Image (cartoon, rainbow, N blue to C red; front, side):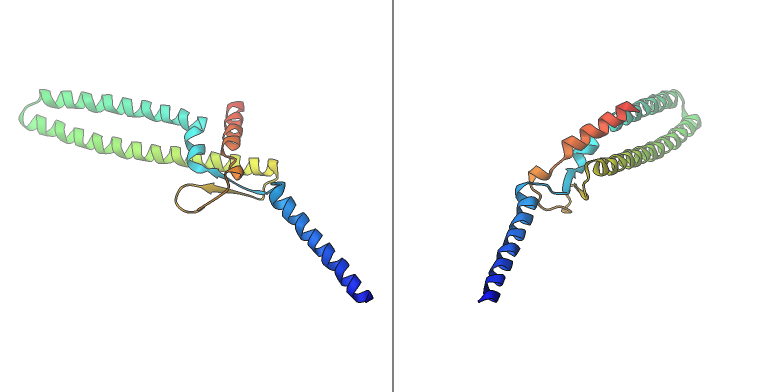
Length: 163
């Protein structure tokens, strides 16, 4: 009889422990796992907007150079025109390569900064995991209450402006 009473007490204690853990994890929403929407962070990041303006200025300057080469080409006849067209084609290829390289460098720079800020933010807030949802199926579902995108975006932009 005494063993049965002890077993009942143990069962009740186990049940209480399980309920407490469940309440702590789900009801109190004290999860250490959250996610961000990667595209929103990228699009809303102030450094990205600054680099976009810089890239647009580069594209405008390149367009002016190419436009002036077209004008020069149109002024020539015969062999001189062919040489001017060849120069234009070479310049066009160089411009396209330069713009592709600069665009790639800017993207890499932006993502490096975003990842550094997310890491710092996660450490400050005590998160164990911050997942990145990018719409490619890496996160198929997550409770919207676990989305900290706006909070992280504000953090990143504040840190960026404080530089």
